[in-house]
Structures are given as structure tokens and as C-alpha cells.
Length: 165
Image (cartoon, rainbow, N blue to C red; front, side):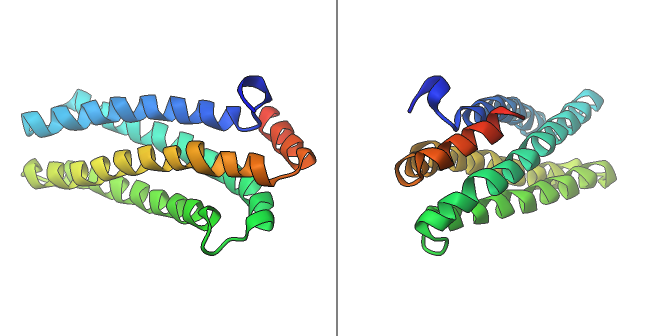
């Protein structure tokens, strides 16, 4: 299944939008580390990036967890499968978003921003790399497995639920 037939097209489109936000976020991190400071404009950009990630990722994860993972879990099981890996990774990203929020608050509280920049960058780079890999797993393994293992009616139900949002 490809293109308009692919029940996962809306999720893949979300991935593309989120990856663009990650590129922007990465650029902000690079500038912050290079300059060893955070300008007022940089703080606004950080906040916008964090809000965009949180507001884009968390609903996206909930959608996958409600629409895609349950029928796939019924077909292939949970433990020892990619279903479990994806669910775990969603939880890991939720934890990282909280760590980024805490690191962002530390930037405002610090008189010496150097260590706070390093901590924020550490969490930011981890999150960026982790999400790139997570989206790759979904694109190259989770969604193709669903296409192979789910019935046409299950795939149509996924297509309908994802297309109607």
C-alpha cells in the first residue's frame, strides 16, 4: 500500500512535520552551544520549539496508541515485539520532554548558563536522535508489519480513524 491507500499516511505526514521541527530545534541548540549564551530571542525560539514538540508529539503518540497499537498487539502480541518497543519509546520521549522542560527552567534560573546550556543540549540532542530512530522504526517496520498482519477491515478501520482527524 502506498500513497492515498496507505492507512498510515496521516501518521507519516505527522512524522515529516515533526522532523522539520526537530531540524529547527537542532539549529537552535547548535547556536546556543556555539555562542555559549541564550539571547532573549533564543529563549523564545526554545520555548516555541518545545511547545511545538510537545503539542505535536503527545497527541500523535496517543493516536498511535489508541488506533494502531491495539489491533497490532492482538495480531502479534506485545512482549518481545515491536509493539512493546514503540510503546516504551513513547514513554521515553514523554520523560525526555519533561527533562527538557526542567532544563529550560534551569536556563532561566542560572547565573552561569554554561552548565545549563550543556544540560539542555544533552537532552535536546538525545531527543532529536531518539525521535529520528523512532520514526524510522515505525516507517520501516511497524507500519509494514501492520499492513502484513492486519486484515483488510482492520486496515480500513485504521485508515478511517486516522483520516477523519
